[in-house]
Image (cartoon, rainbow over all chains, first blue to last red; front, side, top):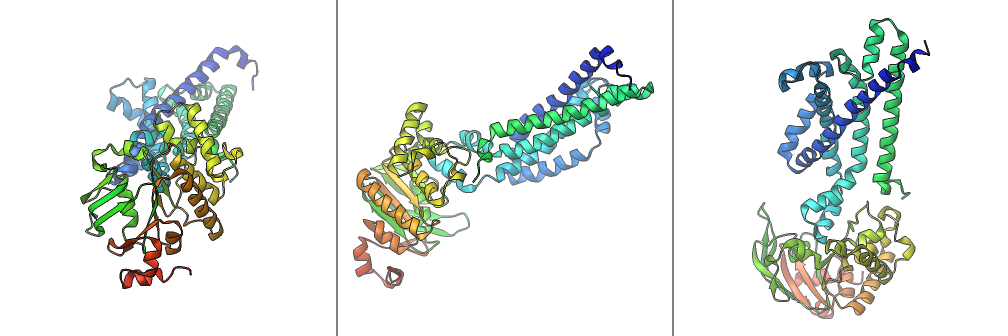
Length: 214
Length: 242
């Protein structure tokens, strides 16, 4: 380890870290926003479920590098465009969360939905005020998996030139300079741990009823 | 007053849950629908707040056909209590009770105040206001269910086997509470049970249903016990007191 490399290259490191945060967080947000309506569809209509859940499973098995290379062809983007990584990771997040949302909604007790309807909730408000909040704990569990996996997958993007901290690995390897590789790895792990801890905290705040002793 | 006029409910699979039901439910009284399971009593109840739509016939509340009403608005004027309680696990006791007031657009302060009054009315300690349903006993949960149904002071209350899931001692006290509440509030209550003892204890009128959704007898509890209309009612009421 050449320790003084770190302060000398602070802008490079922070730049890579910032890019890594954006490239992993943005897809989570996009995936979540899309997963809620699709998960609702899958829960509401058996035909939608029969289509969406297996499709999500298949998408998740496509290797990330293949998707990074394939997307420019499908989207018409440039090969080095960060959008490829964002879209690819959003697709993975969506594939993971659709099932989580559908299962979480299916797990809401029938008696709760029945009584909400009988109290005079219209379906959209019932969804937002009753069904979705009750899905939060399962949703947070799905978000944790998606976020941590995104943080690790962003680095793969370095192979197509867009990879946040992953660029420190590729660059370090090419120059046979272990310090840079280690900095990249340590920061990825710290970022993943921090993101996971934040989501756990967020889940506790968003679902206080799960914390009470019954 | 709730009137069933020639109400029939046939489900998509062809089963007839309720057959040509004519029934007039008195205002300000508890009317109990009783019968074996699958006799159409719950279906009859759910047609009143349009959770189930009748295949034919009409249901009127104070002379107005419920099918002319917007279902959500109709339901906010009708209290509803079920056996599984169906409290919202993610909302505090206070917030659960304030559900309908908040749907009706009351401000939060008034809704909270209303919840506090209701808790007192149903005999729940004020210290439970911030608890979640999972932190309550079965009997306390059902009291919250009753308070929630009463929160917006609806004239009509539908109760579907509300006390069946609690143990006999708690059930007894909940029944006594309901009678005490009713003597104060004078709601029009339609109460479903399969337990003839509960029917006789609570009902000012008792409607005995038989399988196939047919009303076998509709009378005061004493009359049902002493002069059953037919052999089915006689054998059903024989369980009374047991």
